[in-house]
Length: 96
Image (cartoon, rainbow, N blue to C red):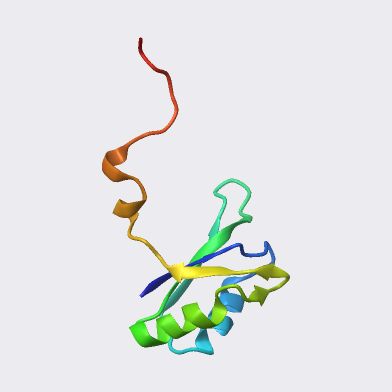
């Protein structure tokens, strides 16, 4: 299961996340999303856990818990296609 982890402190490393999630089971991968220009954390990341029951335990156990001074938002990640349908764009000019 792919798990979204939001509201991360800028100080949280991939190793910090791995250790937090390994308390609930096997972790396949950890990815803290960073800004392409500055290289700083964007405040969210993803953790992949192969066992669904362990992943659900991690979600239940870590959601609304504190890590390095910030309260985590942890839930099952939505597939990319669920985020914005059909390549729709927001904003821009209207033609009248």
